[in-house]
Amino acid sequence: MKTSALHGCARSRTFFAVALLAWPTLGSVGCMPPKREVEMTRLTWKLPVLSPLPETKVLQEKEGIQISVTPCAYEATKVYEQQDKRVPDPLIKSQNVLYYFERRNMPRAVVKPDRLEFLVKLNNKMDRVFRGAGAVVSFNVAGKQVAVEQQGYGELLNAIVTPRSEMQVKVSGPPIASLPDECSIGLFFYDVVTEKDEAGNIKKRANFEWYFQYKTEPKTADEQVTPVMMQVNRQ
Image (cartoon, rainbow, N blue to C red; front, side, top):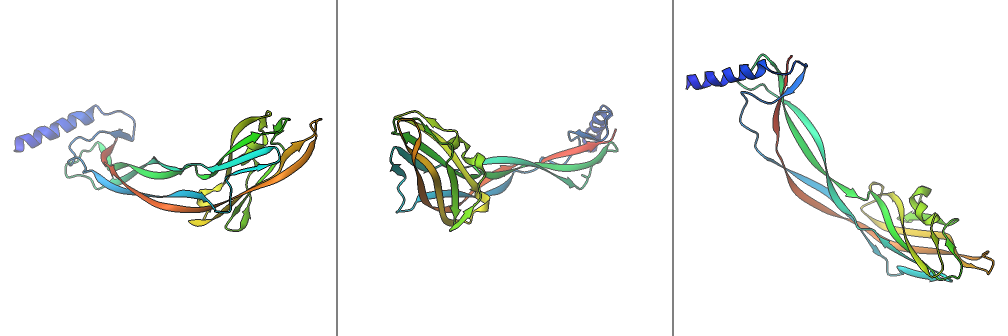
């Protein structure tokens, strides 16, 4: 038994003798405790769900423009964060080891997209080209108007739809993290061109509005995490 232990430490001395000459240096473990057991961690997240309120028509038509709005589908993805925790030195030490630590790649659930997001289908029934330029998008959360950046509906403003054609664009609103767990959401399109004369001049503009019930559903999942013992070597 003693002979075996001595051989083990001899091997350790040999290993450290050829360690890299940088200091400090991450090294694999020589005479170390047994491999760490697998741990379990629980991921939690809130999945947004939007449903149109009864008074809201998803597909709306005014004069020569037909617009439908559909909430996007949300899903959770995993991201990892590296965590290092210093641990007490094992019983078998080496003068070449500065200290030991455990490394864990900890998973975390992230909901994507991270903002309110809607798919908007534009159907141009006019005899003239439809242009989204000039329209304004507004959001209402729990009865209060919220500011949104114009880049969130840039695709709508840049939309050019030829007569009797369709186009799908995306409109984004406030961050999910800023919303309560349950509330009403209003989406408004103001000053949308709905009619032009023979010369292409704008004759009419119209407003469109949709209302949704927003809520979050709590979700959980268990994930395995395997700690890895690491060491920082001296020069």
